[in-house]
Image (cartoon, rainbow, N blue to C red; front, side, top):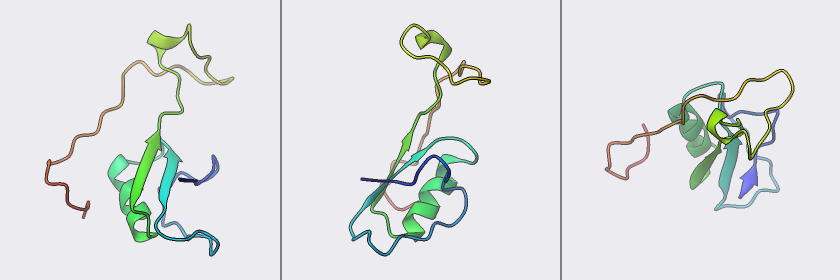
Length: 90
């Protein structure tokens, strides 16, 4: 699993570093654009899968995590639904 880094959100095309060997899985923080856009850019970069990490503390879990300074907790859980086909996102 290769982490894109907190400065890159996969909302724009991603250039795969030459030392990353296929197959690889990209992990990226959520936010900035849709899950579909992140996965599409990951596919175009050659990833076999994209893991979208929830890097925002949820309000109902404030006893377990603390939001970063100057940020608010997330009131609702993010969801992603697909068409169930298992095909690539196009």
